[in-house]
Length: 298
Ligand code: ADP
Image (tube, rainbow, N blue to C red; front, side, top):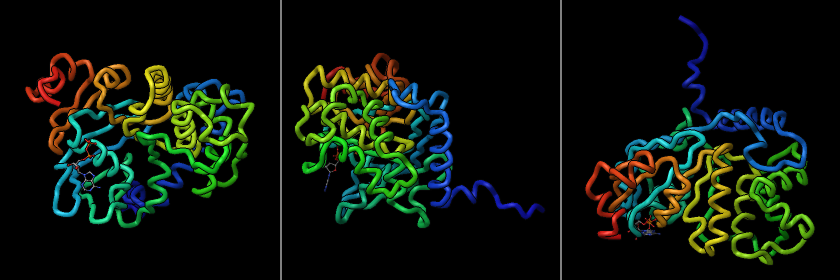
């Protein structure tokens, strides 16, 4: 019998998340052209993606179960949309994926969430590391109000203690990848909150991706924005999927149809179905999905 450790066992430790991430970052840095970097897609050609799998995931607020036994796999380097009526558990589910749900007093999750082969709820896992590799963008743009544009993007790097990176270079890279560089490059010292709503949201996306996560969760990232700013975010989502696995919560079915390869429909905390977006919107398996997308309820 071999004395070598089982690679799967080995992969379940927190150090594996961070080591794997560091190795990838080093690889990506080598692959990354020096500035200017026109887009996220071009920043790291051929970058291997990461899969998230939910197994029997349930989420509670006290005794109330808001998410029920969800099994769902998010494919690497794809955009998956979460749709369903308000209150069906989309945001709660997404917050379980980077362990933010448990921050709410009385809230807890049950079941399993794995990032590739790493169980992110394992007791050995460092929650801070989980949130670094699974980043999140919220509905309302939330730049740090007292910080400049530059410092907003650098904040994630500073907070998560990323070392050995050229801060200026990384901030520029993230702003370019978020499609904001050309609009802000001459006023990096201006307050983040001096930007328009759409720009602030792209700033928050830059802040999230600056730490080079593997997965980006977006909870209604465009619902507070006007139609033009919304389209910019959608274009950006298209580009970012070359580099990240993306989960986007949206109540806007046209948006799901525009950006997502697959769509998951939730109702009353349950996953009703998940499939190719075209199929979900044209020929769903479940009559409840059909009733929702045809506007019979919602
Ligand atoms: P969605 O994102 O689909 O609108 P949510 O995940 O926000 O749905 O909510 C799912 C259910 O959980 C709803 O019944 C909502 O009232 C409840 N809920 C959400 N947040 C909290 C909270 N902080 N405390 C208690 N219940 C909550």
